[in-house]
Image 1 (cartoon, one colour):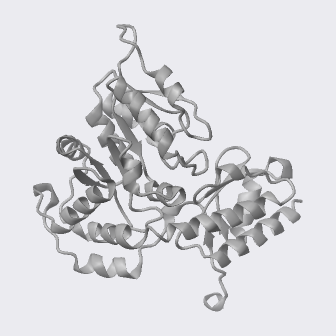
Image 2 (cartoon, helix red, strand yellow):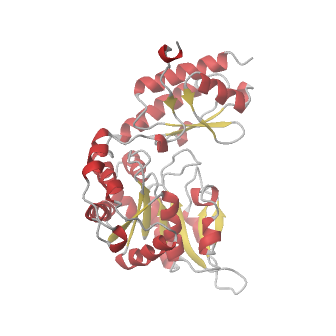
Image 3 (cartoon, helix red, strand yellow):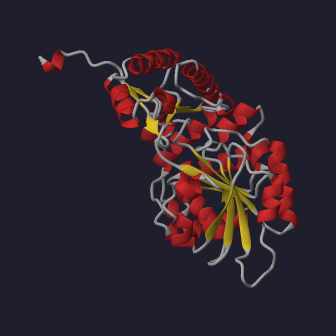
Length: 353
């Protein structure tokens, strides 16, 4: 009978957004004290925002529904219509946020190519516009740490400090898309506050490697967050009894950060073993956190065929270009899962025809 048929475990390496909330999170969500957050009356959301502000060393914080909303709220608060935001050429805000900066904030992005996703201070300096009626005013520099499309690379604190100095010398604030901020902190051996100190405002996700089901946080100066709160409302992000979500976010920040090192170790093992397979190319220098990019062009196997055969064998991954596959480790993928995934990839590539 079909109901009795064995179904192998699915190893989901598409993204750390597929993580499931822990049982402790589910219990906390069920009993969370709540109130109307639009009125500022949800005690659990207030606790989460105070915790987030403390962890980033900022005056205040604001719970938002997603990283995309957090970035858009931040940028819309920072800039005026017709101004420009400097960002890395393959940044998330350029590639994956539905042109919200242009559509909603009325600003444009000036793409600057980094080194493995890391913007260089001299390049940022050159990209800041002079005062000229023919050109938009540079209103903001947006950094991404870790950098998604570069493979989860970390911008060193020393580089962040240099960029901050360059920006502030020209009167330009700095925002960070820190969706995976805590991955960056764990990988670099510093605190989230050390990183956040280098920028004026920062957004980080609770719903990726930290395991909460929903939400991100925007942190910055108190006056900025007060203005951002109106932008959140304008974008439909004013929630009512949001403490049900906030309870999971509190546990994400207090219980789930240190274990990110396990994800990084698993990604390194996965990357090294993939790199040893014939026809698979991995730039191991980019494998700094929990993302692995593998180029399969030299295997001769079409991307669709590769992904389909992996899926049929129980491994899910994502195309990240015509010949590049992305694998992301997270809390719901064990060391044993990673080793099994490696064996499955090898088996798929061994039977290319």
